Length: 434
Image 1 (cartoon, rainbow, N blue to C red):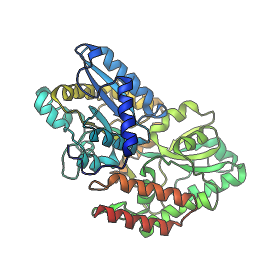
Image 2 (image 1 turned 45 degrees about the vertical axis):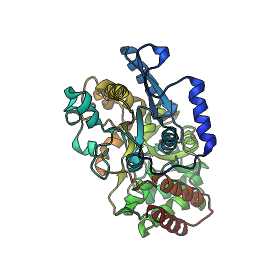
Image 3 (image 1 turned 180 degrees about the vertical axis):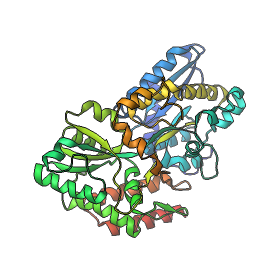
């Protein structure tokens, strides 16, 4: 195990995880005595009930029911991909590992540098020669490249692809005397937000604030900034500061945008208390099923005179199983998840754009669904603007990501100015990257 950096999780967390595993009677790998000769493996994911959790349970149940050799145990990890990486670090320190893990794009380099894994190509070559063309048959080359590290190694297989879109409450926009089709630029977002507050008393805007900086990257890089340049943090450029200031001004000065947790922000939009919500298309299903007003999803705003740059959201699936038996089981489960029918179930429940190239056009896949579901169009139409999710190099990815989260809360909380905060954070991140 090549763990280069031990997180400061403390003995309490390690003990708690150990006690949890013992109390549930779950095993990470190998044969579960309670299941006879079946191989039991764990699938670690980050999908809460409102963002794919129901689909995870449905797919796992279907896989477990259709064969009698493998039992998959899904394990939800809170705090998104950062939380999963922290929990995986604790497992590694204890000499254990799940079989399949969901890794966010921003942690691609961190994962490949710090954890033992088997590339899908290696598992196929060793145990499944009949699948030797599986990856090239079902995935476009540029999509597969998203799951390659800086050394060009195929770390995993893309599973979730998404871009941020702007959900709008057309009823509130109309009440505020605004164009119901929504704003096209970030400058217009600020103007719309202020007018919505003045005319309706409702918040105008919320930009998602989970435990990652994915949407923030879209805001800054579309302005012309770069999160990382030549392996160094570079977001505190003139363009990056200007972009962040527009967001911060809406929150701290105009008071037209709200600064709350991601779940609270999404719920505020669903409740009709926020008119515009900038978040992943993966929230489409939850939003569409729960709003009681005329809602729409439109393409991500652009900056005037700039080309949009949208980080590829979502994740890849990687194999962390250690031995032959569980690696084989992991691949069988992954092949099931990547089938046309499973991909369709996953997309319909979440809104993620399917990474497999034939799902959208297949009668068994999403053809009829996409014809009827207009909210998906915004994400599909803007895929040409997709860029890689910034992944800090080396083994300091978690710490760098956390510093960006900390400064986000300080800036939006009014405790520090944008220029001062971003410049200081950029310097601190580059110090730990050295």
